[in-house]
Length: 524
Image (cartoon, rainbow, N blue to C red; front, side):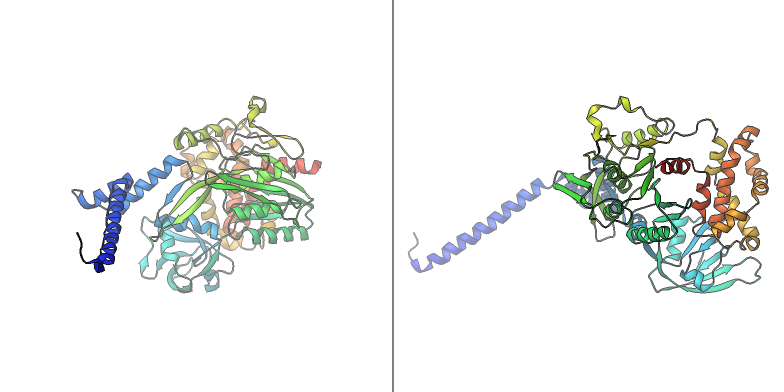
């Protein structure tokens, strides 16, 4: 029995502190025992594995596999992939401002970008880059990413280039200060006729709002009263940009899209009014590679009966990702919700059978829906929805067009596709421009080139005589059937080598989507 009562408070304090320490000890044991298996195994490998290993690589492999098991679009991005995945959406990167490609182990400038550092320094199309600073770039098995590492760098830093220029005996030295280089989301904008404008939007990036606003003003100034917006091949991007684009066509208060997830409450996005093209006739072009933000815009336009959607059923990516960044420069994009169109359709295709089956379904659709318009009468009633005006639209993943474009199966494209797969047309066009640049540079604009370039038959004969083409042994029928398409692509590739915005204006001259869209929009 304690006799000195004066020490009682101290004994109580001591007991209290011992209780806290004991509690902390028990909590530690509980935490250790309940620690998730992944961390326990990784820790076990770090401390006890027989051989020395790169534990970071193993951790990344575990993350990649884990996220793949969740859904097709949750993903781990390592530090090396991070900028390649994010830069196209930022609308700019720091570099010297050139389009280039590898030709016979040499880095060849296709085009210096307008007002970019390289153009200002005097770099020309056709120049060969021999060295960047002290690093030799020729006679290496470099890919595009390898070259970019030598040319990209911190804004304001200098890179010294050693250049071989055709018809110059001596190598040329250029010191170029790196700067912010814009990456554009609009590939083409021009008038198809006196009243119909055309915009091809390739991604929804940080600069899309500014670019689209500028393009609309320009086309309106040229007399645009109707618009064809081309979202084919557009794999998506920023939600904010998709909402802005949709908003430009809708009156105030129209639902554009809503998102909802297990731990994300429903969030709805409405048009704000004051749109730039609320009344003009509108057609959207989509295909099997239009995804995510593209599908949000198409769904908003279709469900609000604002315009006509034509083309093919879109990809069906309707999962919302949030990005968690790590200190080492890597990141995780985790799916946290789904996108729904105004009528309540989930944009996302089913993926319950796993990622492999999910992409196999996509390739299967390429060989069915791509060639034939699907029979809507076979679609379950549970996948039928109503637009604002009561029209029937279809769910099940992706956006089903109002007017389906059926592929032309009467022509055998095998020879044309073989040329594409071997990059023969691309390479021929580059070599042709490289040899004839002085003669070709008298064309002052894309329009001038389209109207006055008359070498179609001549270059087709040159292409047909190439040894690698002769080895393919195409039949006379294949040559005749493919000629129109080969010539169009050849001319477009030549235009790409001459003008920054040259390719699409030439390539889309005989495009069946646009031809069909013009027929439909002129009926309104």
